[in-house]
Length: 124
Image 1 (cartoon, rainbow, N blue to C red):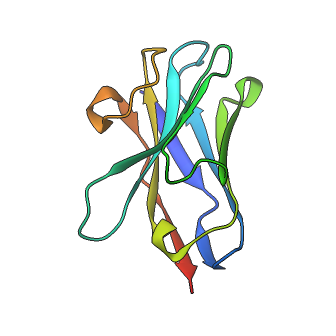
Image 2 (cartoon, one colour):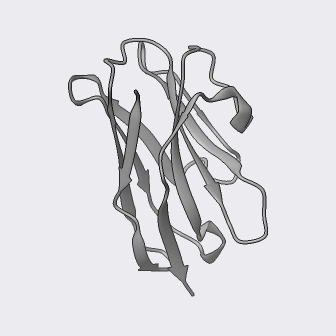
């Protein structure tokens, strides 16, 4: 049973930074991909970024390019999301997700496992 546990959310002022973590357990990820999604109230879940476990290829949504950075620590089975220059529109519940494919896909349906989410609130 794969489990993904997010941490690091919180309240921050606009322009500030936060780092989210996603610890994976239940299997050793040496292939496949990990991603971050977010969902604001009344909106659909949207792709933020993804990273391949092997090789470290990344993909970002246009809305976060240049501000967010995804990284992974294979030894710790952990993925990170460094969020800088945060804006009020970044406010959402952020979810970690894992896929068995190495292709970095954006639809939520492409991902097999999900964390419980962590709230990020950016005040203006």
